Amino acid sequence: MTSTNSRTSTISAAAAAFAFLSVIRRAGTTRRLVLAALAGSAADLAGVALIGSAAWLITRAAERPPLAALSVAIVAVRAFATSRGVFRYGERLVGHDVALRAQAGTRERLYESLIPPRPPAQRGGDLLSRMVDDTDAVQDLLVRCLLPAAAAAVTGAAAVTAAAFLLPRAALALAAGLIVTGLVLPAATGAAARRWSARVAPARAELATRVTDLVHGAADLAAYGAGERALAAAMEADAKLSRLERRRARIDAAALGIGTLTQGLTVVAVVLAAGAADLGRVPTAVLALVALVSFEPVLPLAAAGERLAGVLGALRRLRETGATPPIVTEPADPAPPPEPPLTVEVRDLVVRHGDREPALAGVSLTLTPGRRVAVVGPSGAGKSTLLAALMRTAEIESGDVLVNGVDVRRLRSDDVRARITGLTQDPYVFHATVRDNLRLAGPDASDEELAEAMRRARLDAWAGRTGWDTVLGEDGRTVSGGQLQRLALARALLFDPSVLLLDEPAEALDEETADLLMADLLDATRGRTTLLVTHRLRGLEQVDEIVVLEDGRVAQRGTHAELAAVPGYYRDLWRSEAMTRHR
Image (cartoon, rainbow, N blue to C red; front, side, top):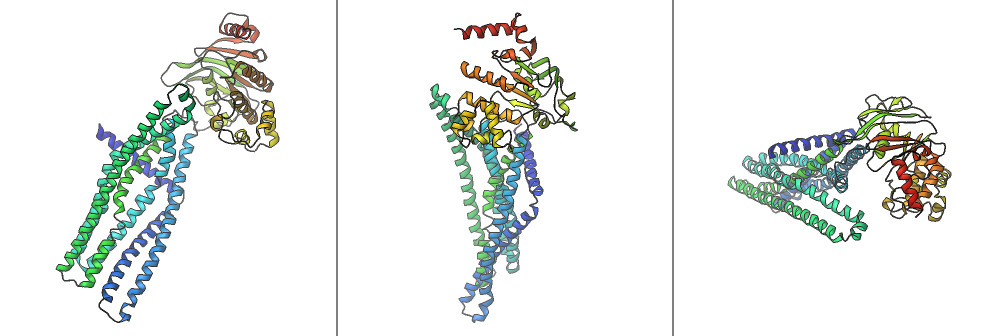
């Protein structure tokens, strides 16, 4: 079983690596990648040639020949020293340009894959870790793995070839040392690191999740005295990650030590071979130093093998994140979106979440232009699911949702939400200015249009006091619940959809604030096609129809006067609200 999982993981990582390289091709950076590899190889070759020519120059100069005999070597040393720096600069410039372009392409594809609503496959901290750490790690595939490996292969082959011209026996010793350091050692470190890297990423994600919980849940943790327990859990996650990182560091240290030892033994073997062949002082010095410096691009490959295991794991996790299928299946041949005014017909709608019982079981209703319909019912009755089906953020199992006679399953989800959308149950306020939060619904809206939307939501006075350029805290922590709901309402009114959906706009507000908000909301939606989901009945005498949902089915429907006059959930709730107000 473990072997099967390992093979599956390897195949998935390889597929992710190919997907990453395809990003490079799409970004048009293949030529730059080849150029970076050539520049890196040229820089390493210049380094080997520099040491070789310098060794020849120094040992030959010790014999005190005429200066003219050294002039070529002097020029060569200067040329190789200069070219090495130039080529290295070019390799770093072009290589990092390719890596950053590919990383940006990978991050862009990840963001695009997250836009369609999907089942929550990862926790918030885990997803954040993948979006930041894993996308940062993928550039190492080029900068620390592929480009160094290409340069090391070219340099090693050139060094062995040059040694073969001087002494084939020394070339064999050099080739053996380079193979051990450049192939065997990276393979061994990669295999050893693969086991740890598979545990490091989840540990890092766990730490990110714990820290996210600490930050976002600080108030609740303090209120219930759970802060120390949550902090202890975060510290334990940090300690676990540190232990794994230390083990990985030991692998790197061992690989570097073995590589350096192999380098030293190889140089000794080359010198002994040259001495046995009575090669002479100058060729022996050149061979020894060329053998020494040829390991410079090869030694980092041991760490590259360990890093490659982590990079492939990061690519695999990114692929898993983007591979989660969206909740809603898009049509292969979408129909053209209907033009307003819109009539929405819901016929025998059935929606199910996973393998559970249907959240909606045969719901029907009609929204004609300018008509306002309210949906009420106990928690879990399927009210929010109905709105999700209308906005195409929940898949329809059976039944129909028709927009001007067109099934929404034949329309692109974006086209549906451009016409049918509104205020969600838990609106999000971004860490941005009041103006920018409002312009989420209308990027090109003028200041006059923004002010009008705020006026209709009864927030114009608040915006004047607070200031349009005041930065609101993350998730609306600097505004009250009523202000947050009104800001979300202003955003929905600014977007101006053909059909406005409002999901529990007065949820979690005190009674006075909720009553004021509902009154303003009903006033702002007068004459607008609206579907209002609420558990508060005050003001619903103004809507055209009320639909009562219970257990995913329509239990009652009618006007406020009709429903308040007959036994049922609506009348019971109405009387309960009336008693609460008169206390």
